[in-house]
Image (tube, rainbow, N blue to C red; front, side, top):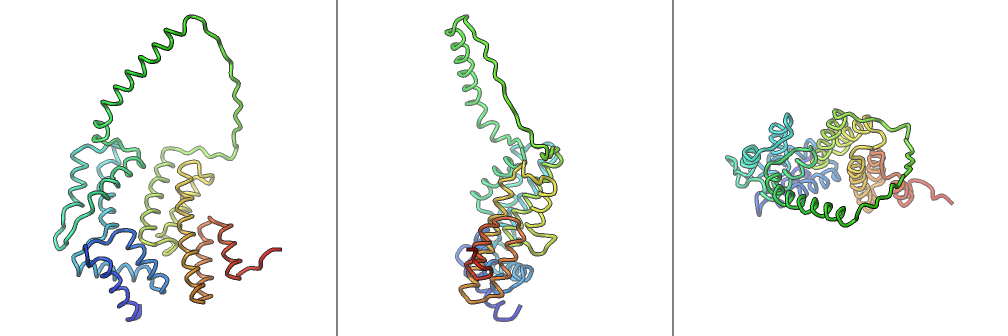
Length: 287
């Protein structure tokens, strides 16, 4: 990285954290995208960001969420249950202000992450169980009484209706095991983390693309969480096309081609990419 780019990046980080000593995920992603547009490598950008955060005593939301994710996996991977003490211990670890820091993780962000984690990984959360137990029981009682009343008022006359259902079975459908689904869950989690780090396709072995490719090998038809896989791929395509737009505005033809090629790697948004290529004059318009 040349000195001018390093100075720009240092100033950009301080502009983001000087008021609250907190670098949230969206702002970190924007900084990395701007750095990538200037040709700064992901690893170099991350190093500068980390150093400047340390100097200022600021925290990185993404890194604190990664620590929270690690703790939640540690507590729940075996029994798929998160009890009250485990949840408090995990939250205390990331909400507390660490030595040399001026902030902890935003409590609202932490709470939302725990809820999302439990839903995605099928974890039973004691706090949620207690919250919903009473109203659920009451609802069940009302439902039973309603059904009983319906059958009582209906009388003794019954009519048998035979329904013939025709199912078309796709012979190419893959039967996914619990192990397959667990692997897809893990790869999706990692893909999301790589997106937050702006590691979309680079480095190849540690990128969102690598995770999505692994998922497609397991589940080529997208039977399990397929929409989420498509969503991540489309977000990355949109990101690269936005960078291509910026390069086109700057009359940087090499940059335009680079970002278009990166977008094609994702295996998504084919029509959108094609339209961009036409708009940028990279392919001829079909008549």
